[in-house]
Amino acid sequence: MERMRAVVLAAGMGKRMHSDLPKVLHPVCGQPLLVYVLDALAAAGLARPIIIVGHGAGEVRAVVADRAEFVEQRDQLGTGHAVLQALPLIETSSDPVLVLYGDTPLLEAATITALVELHRASRAAATMLTAELVDPGGYGRVIRRPDGVVTRIVEEADATPEEARVREINAGTYVFDPRALSEGLDALRPANAQGEYYLTDTMGWLLSKGRRVEALMADAEQTMGIKSRRELAAVEAVMRRRILERLMDGGVTVIDPAATYVHATVRVGRDTVIHPQSYLEGTTVVGAGCLLGPQAHVVDTTLADGVRVVASMVAGSEVGEGTTIGPYSRLRPGSRIGRFVEIGNFAEIKHATVGDYTKIHHKSYIGDATIGERVNIGAGTVTCNYDGRQKHHTVIEDGAFIGSDTMLIAPVRVGRGAVTGAGAVVNKDVPPGGVAVGVPARVIRHVSADAPR
Ligand code: UD1
Image 1 (cartoon, rainbow, N blue to C red):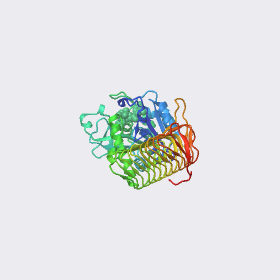
Image 2 (image 1 turned 45 degrees about the vertical axis):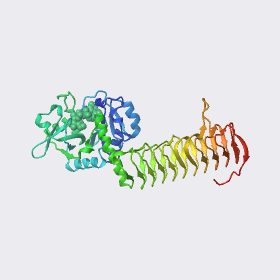
Image 3 (image 1 turned 135 degrees about the vertical axis):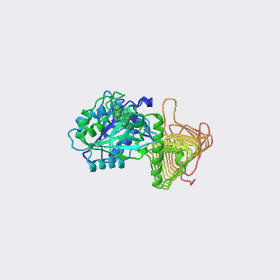
Image 4 (image 1 turned 90 degrees about the horizontal axis):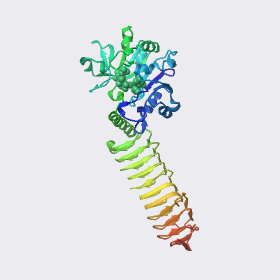
C-alpha cells in the first residue's frame, strides 16, 4: 500500500458537540479522536494521509503536525465537496484512494486492509464499508437489488419510508479507483434535501455508468462515528474495554474492568494487578508485578517493577522498584523516588529526589528537596521551601533522622547521619552526625554519622 493515499475528512464543525474544540480533537481515553484514525492508517501502511480541515484548522494542524498533509475546505458544502479539495494531490496517481472520516476512532487497521484487498481483488470502481445497525437513524442507507448488488446510497433526509427501514448503513469509509473518483466528483450536483455535494452520489453515478461498486460489511462497533457527546461517551466505553482487554491479554490483572480507566498511551507490565477506581493516564509506564489501587491515580509517571500505589495520586514522577505509596499521598511533578522507599499516608512530595530505603510515613511535606538514602522523615515534617517570594532547596543527607514535627527552613542542609529533635525548627545547616533540637534548633551533641538506623 506504499503509494496509496488516504483522504481524511475533518472539516465539519461538529455542531452537535456544542464545543469550542474541533470535534476530531476531542479526547477518547486520553487521545484525540483523529490520532486513532492516523494510527490505524499507519498500521495499515497508509502513513501521511491528506486531511481536509476547515473548522479549527489551526488547532488540528498543531496537533497532527507532520503526520499528515493538509488541505483547507473553506466552505463545508458536503462530503463530496470535501474530497474534491484533495483531488489535485491524488489525481496523477493510478493507485486507489482511501476516503474516511476523522471521527471514527474505532476503525481497525485490519478492516482498512480488508477493504483495500477486496477493492483490488474485485476491480471495482469503488468499494465501501457498511454495517448493520439495530438503529440506523441518521446514517445513509445502502440500497441493494434483490440479488445483493448495491444500487445506491440514500441519505436519511432523502429516503422513502421503505428505504429508511433498511438497516445496512454506509459507514463513510471507501476505496476508489482514482479516475472513477475524479469523474464521479465532477458529476456531483447538490440536488438533495440538504443542498450538499454528497460523496455518496458518486456511487449511484458510477453504477449508472455500468461500473461496479463493492461493499464490505464490518462489525457495527468499528463504524461508530461521533456527532454528539452521547456518542463520544459510547465510543469511550468501547475504547476503554479494548484497552483493558489488550492489557489483560498481555498478562495484567484488572479486577473490575467496569471501574478501571486506562489511557490508550499507557503501558503496563505483566503480573501487575489493577484494583478498581484506578486511573492510569498520559505517558505512564508501569513495570511488572505492581499493585495499583484501589484508587490509584497515576499520570505521566514511570513506575518500576513491584511498586505499590494505594489511594494516592502520582503525577509527572519516577518511582523506583519495590517502593510503596499511600494510602492517601500525593506525588507532584518532578518527584524522583528511589528503590524500596516507603511513602505512607498524607505525604506530599514535589520536585524532590528521595534516595533508596528512605521512609516518609506520616503527614509531611517534602518540596524542592534532595533526600538521601535510608533517611527517616518523622511525622509532620515540613520543608519550608517558600519565603513568600522564592522557592529554596532543602538537602537531607544519607542516614539522617528527622524527628517528628521538624520544620526545615530552606535553604538548609542536614548532614549525613544527623538527628533533629521533635519540634525542631532548623534554620541553620546541621553538620554530619550533629544532633539539633529546639526553636530555633541548635546542635547539642554529635553521634556517629554512620550509625545504623
Ligand atoms: C455521511 C454520509 C452517510 C453516512 C455517514 C456515516 C454523505 C452524503 N453521507 O453522513 O451516507 O452514513 O456519513 O457517518 O456522505 N465533512 C467535511 N466537509 C464537509 C462535510 C463533511 O469535512 O463539507 C466531514 C465531517 O467533518 C465528518 C464527515 O465528513 O467527519 C461526515 O460528515 P457528516 O456531515 O457527519 O456526514 P453525514 O452527512 O451525516
